[in-house]
Image (cartoon, rainbow, N blue to C red; front, side):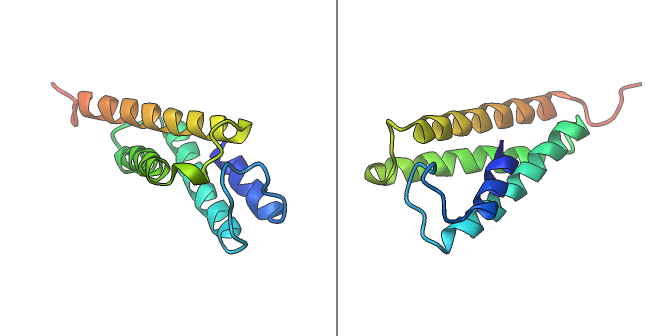
Length: 116
């Protein structure tokens, strides 16, 4: 989903009416590239299937979601809460928070070296 949103922002930068807050012309490609980076990291995490090796990506996912929620709490008037894009964005943040937290818990619960 992150990868798709990033590509959409880069492919059609003039049509960002579906974004839950106003983006300036400079922020559109920057946000698109940023989302593509997180999308590639998420795809790598799925392909890798080793939570321990992907701990940095999981921490980044949790921190991104927490920092975005803090920003939304700080500037609630700039976010379109009742729009479909707003609801989808909040669901995306919740998914990132949950999946990142589960990946961190799994990385912590697995032993580092095989026990013999």
